[in-house]
Image 1 (cartoon, rainbow, N blue to C red):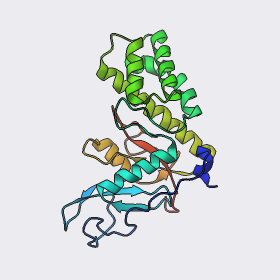
Image 2 (image 1 turned 120 degrees about the horizontal axis):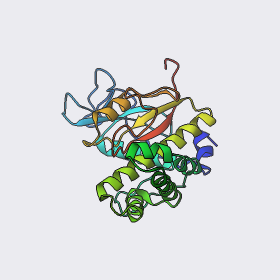
Image 3 (image 1 turned 135 degrees about the horizontal axis):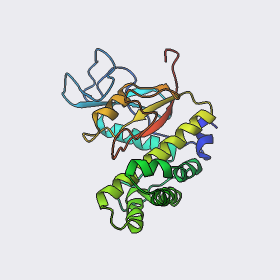
Image 4 (image 1 turned 180 degrees about the vertical axis):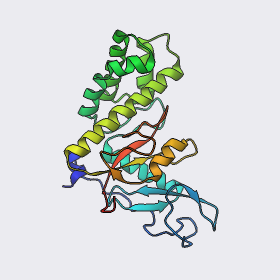
Length: 240
């Protein structure tokens, strides 16, 4: 049983092996001068190439957009952070006790961040905590927030749901990595055109020590409003 098996408390799933570990375009199979550091176009076929780390062996690979999405899903399964594709569909995977507890403690931070009274902020923190515990997903949590704060817009409720869920789950994941002696981490984006430059830069740096900040100054996602990124455990190479 490996580290991530212990993390999830279940048998490690078998994943499809995807991508090239060598600098070869996954679309046209032409050799590249060097391994891309981030999403970029192939100089030969002009198709986009993506960089990911496979959860099965922790190797950096260059992949197609389709395979990048598959690897992102593999990481979500590894981390227990699987969000439904539609707002009405709850995320799957086991709730993380650490994330639930962490969310409950964020009342003071939420008061300052969202300009709420201490009482309102504490109620919001509890709603977020309950949403993670009950696997409500982003859409369900946003709905729960609006039921309690009826004068809040749908857009604002969803932003809070997205940001606070990402923060709690990422912090819980990071704490668990450290507790289990995992020394490396990496920023994983969704790999589409909606990803901002901040998160692209954080992903491009690759694997860094768990106690170090990414280029944006963040220790873990979220790196921006409505951030959809995740934090993944990784093997830290000697040069890192």
